[in-house]
Image (cartoon, rainbow, N blue to C red):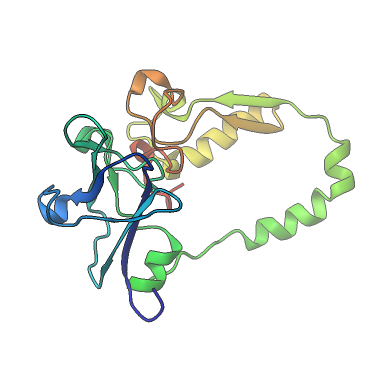
Length: 206
């Protein structure tokens, strides 16, 4: 909100009778932070001013038309905890631009030289006239056996070198979004579509 920093929660649950924010910061007590419904849209909303909740796990306690309360993961969560540490729990973002402006700190992009090179070496006409061969890869599986501790940062250079040596011109990643089960390779349809996979690091690492 203008002039007031805090954390805003919102979720679309048009048929719910009641919705509350629950998380590490309120002991997962649905009575602590009930949300307000916007009647026209079915969106439930709550703003918690001042609190620095970055990195805290949270969810939504939803009371349906029939049955007891259920805790649901945020379908639009931007960051998730590592699956080993919390299943499939969303966490209040630490790497989004709103958090940066509120709590200080910036992310410094370091690709200025590459952008200049790309513009000169791969202009629109040149880019469109080049042959395209695509290397498809699942990051976690590719790193298995190659790297002792895989992350977005440690994967970048060896993967690029590998693809270049094979003669591919582009890379296509299997889903990089958050997913609950390792065996699904990211094709498991669940919430987490708006968050990068925390198994390999943070959005800044990505």
